[in-house]
Image 1 (tube, rainbow, N blue to C red):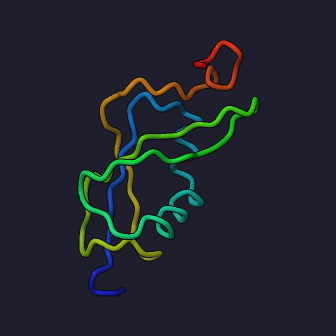
Image 2 (cartoon, rainbow, N blue to C red; image 1 turned 45 degrees about the vertical axis):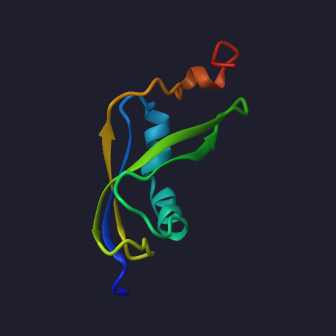
Length: 104
């Protein structure tokens, strides 16, 4: 591992993220995606990440935040990605987001 490589990062998502959204974020493929795309990070970095398209074609963008960085600041394929849950933010990512009754 390079000297500036992060050994571990903790990424948080909001408490009101649906079970489907949590499944999308926590699956191994999404963790691998983060290790390939994040680059340099620091505690407090925030961004929205597209995590999937529901059965009706509506997308789900999840607000993520870096809560902790151990080691260097460069996320590599060897960086361990852990998740934590932070306060709710009003995200609408359940089945409702995929239906006509969902948000506009």
